[in-house]
Image 1: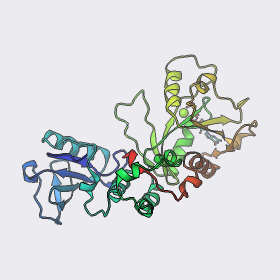
Image 2: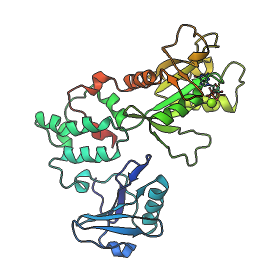
Image 3: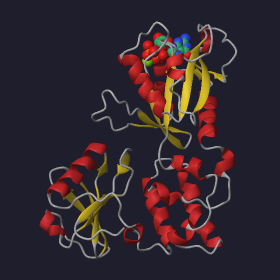
Image 4: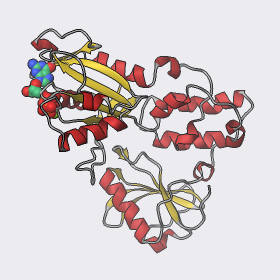
Length: 330
Ligand SMILES: Nc1nc2c(ncn2[C@@H]2O[C@H](COP(=O)(O)OP(=O)(O)OP(=O)(O)O)[C@@H](O)[C@H]2O)c(=O)[nH]1
Ligand SMILES: [Mg+2]
């Protein structure tokens, strides 16, 4: 996987905002790019063209690390600038070259996964992996790949690649209020919205350590005729890994509009939430009830967050002591 020739990689998750971003530039002479050349191990405050100021580190003889502010726009502008200078973005750098300090190949891959994983829940479990594989006498990716599949893997990959959660339901049941409350309470990571007017990408929201891509949809009921709104909701529902069906206390039944329920992916999970619970009783069929009041007081939100986390990455999976082939996602 090692790439020869000048290139750069973005070592921090690109869809999230952190205090700093890390961009690794592999180039024989950084001065040709307008960057200061440093000796091994040197660290300097530096100007990154007219884009930003930050920290420049000489990590190893082949590469320097640019650490600008972590905003998506800054990272994108620097990446574009490097590409214009003949230093293209390499999607897949060899983790062993990026992390020469790693003792084993699996450890290098773990460090690469750690740098990109958006979910805080991923940290402890990733840190454990080199030791777990080593306990089986396995230190390389090739040997690990030869071992039979582990059932828990598909759920754990959700810690690395955020799943899509779609909030659906009739108009005015509180779908948008719910995501606003979650974003307020649960460190929203603003998603990259460029070019997505129709095809919503939603917001990345941290649900107690699990980051998901939450997509709000327009209210749909039988009065809504086929057209743009339905198409938009259908597009989201088809891609969703988990559907949060919001049902108001005024709703006569807790069934999802047939057009939407027909589109739900067969592996998708469903949580039926009774919204605006302060306004009345719900019909049976809701899994839990929530209310979000204008004064900011809320009920049931933590239970909902826990429920979603348990659906997507159950506690039993998190505590599964077997090793995990996490690199298939990086
Ligand atoms: N009393 C009360 N009002 C709520 C609650 N949640 C939302 N509302 C109010 O209900 C109304 C509709 O909320 P929205 O979040 O816009 O509903 P929606 O499902 O996104 O509506 P559409 O986008 O039109 O489908 C707003 O006036 C909210 O302030 C709640 O828990 N309790
Ligand atoms: Mg809405």
